[in-house]
Image 1 (tube, protein in one colour):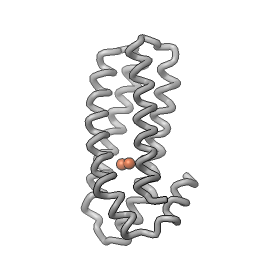
Image 2 (cartoon, helix red, strand yellow):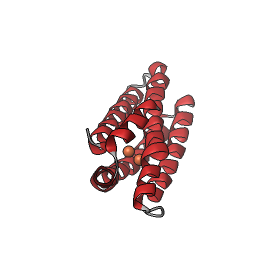
Image 3 (cartoon, protein in one colour):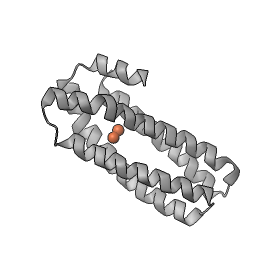
Image 4 (cartoon, protein in one colour):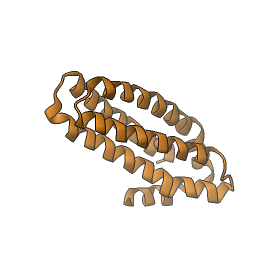
Length: 141
Ligand SMILES: [Fe+2]
Ligand SMILES: [Fe+2]
């Protein structure tokens, strides 16, 4: 298993969890939105944590590239987390338009982010790092 395969699969799972939330909101099914949102939030934050706590430090240590792609990725995670907080607030206020607008912004940000990881960062990790140890550490989080 490569880092690219392992983490790209998580991107796909998070996309699916988000799609469920959006669908419930489109249908005004507010009673079930928060639970679906929690699943999306939990999966996304765990994915970020695997990258921030395990993958990025290993990449930085091995390549010596500290101020490069990993810094950009961390910054984008911060932006994504802020949007997730605002989306959660919009759900609690049952504010459909605000949620959908924040959700669109989130999806644009995260799709571009994921594409950079999948096309540039993960292949570099697969090339330079000892992958089995890294996946094992990520699984333990
Ligand atoms: Fe990321
Ligand atoms: Fe990622």
